[in-house]
Length: 388
Image (cartoon, rainbow, N blue to C red; front, side, top):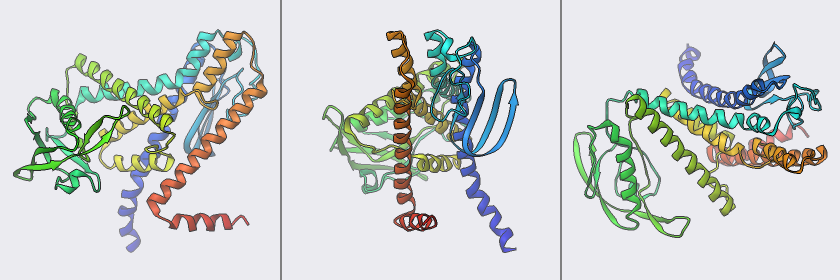
C-alpha cells in the first residue's frame, strides 16, 4: 500500500520532466524539419532524419529517408547528400555530386537549406505568440501580479509579496478593464521603475482584500552606456489579452520581434563582457521547462516559443558546428568560386563541436552544483571511480 501511495507523488514530479524532454525534442524536430523541408523543395536527397542521440527507440524508412528517434533529445540532424558535416549520420553520401546533391545546387538554394532550421524555429515562435493573442489566457484575474521576488532585492526588503496585484506606481494608475492594453501597461510599469534609480517610489498593490501603498527605495544598475536604471527585484505577470484577428497577428509579430532583438543584444553583451552569466545549459533548460510545465500549457508553450527563438539566434552564429558556420563556408566558396579543402572544414567543425560539448558539460556541472550543492562532486567522484 505504501508503494501505491507513492505513485501519485512520483507521477506529479515525473510528468513535468517528461513534458520538458518532449518540448525540447519538439523544438529540435521543428529545427531539423526546416532543413528537411527545403531539401525536398530543391530536390536534395536526405538519407537520414534523426532526432536525439543515444539508444534508438524508433526507426522507419519512408521513401529514401531513414527516420530515427533516440532516447536523449539534446540534438538531431538531417543527413544531406553532397554535404559532409561532423555528426551527420554515416556520411555515405557526403561526396555525392549528382542532381540530387547539395553540392550541385545554386548558392541561394544552399542558403535556404542551411537557414531552414532557423526559419522554422522563428516561424514556430511567431505562430505561438500570434496564437496566444488570438485565444488569450483563461485567467479571470485581469490584473498584473507579482510572479516572483528576487532574494535580497528592494522588493523583498520593503515587503512586496508574490501574488500582490499591482494597482499603480507613483502617478501611474493601471486600468485592468481594457484587456488589450495590459501588456502596454506592464511595459509602462517597468519603464517607471527603470526611470527612478536609487529613488523612493510608491507602489500601490492589492493583497487579498486590502489596498496597500508601499514606499520602496529602488536599487540601480548601469546599462551598456554606463547610465543607471532602477531595479525593483520583482517579476510581473500579466494575462495574455484576447485580441481581434489582425491585431493579434500584428501584436504577436511585434512581440516576437522584441524578443528576438532582446536576445541578440543579450548575446552581444555576453560576447563583449566575456561572461557566461545568465547562460542556461541543458540541466537548467530542462529544470526551467519542468517548472514552467507545472504552471499550465499556456506558460509552457510561451517557454518553448522563447526557447525556439534562442535556438534560432544561437544557430546563426558563425561557428563551424552550427548552421551559421556552414553558411559561412558556403558563402566563402561562392565568393572565391572554389571549394574550401575538406580537411580545413573538418578541423574547424571538430574544434567547434569540442567547444560546444565542453561548454555544455561545464554549464551542466555548474548548474548541478547549484541544484544539489557540493554533494554533486562526490557523486561524480564515485561515478568516475567505477571506470578505474
